[in-house]
Length: 96
Image (cartoon, rainbow, N blue to C red):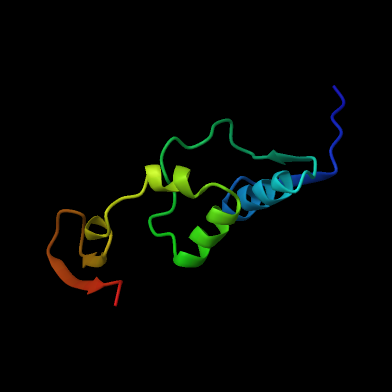
């Protein structure tokens, strides 16, 4: 099987996925390949900053992102523990 593309993107992480979205938005034929035989069904990023959302907005993906967004109250801390069920050593607010 022969496949032709202008750009081949290796890796479906944040950089590869963003590149594929940017190129597609501008009409550039591209193909993204990954070494995995599946795509994650759950989010891999826990925090997306305002600049990332500006990019998503420019790509027309903001509404899709917001469908899966969680309330800040659920993601506003870094907790340091000995283990998942262990004593909490410290809790830092990640938002000012």
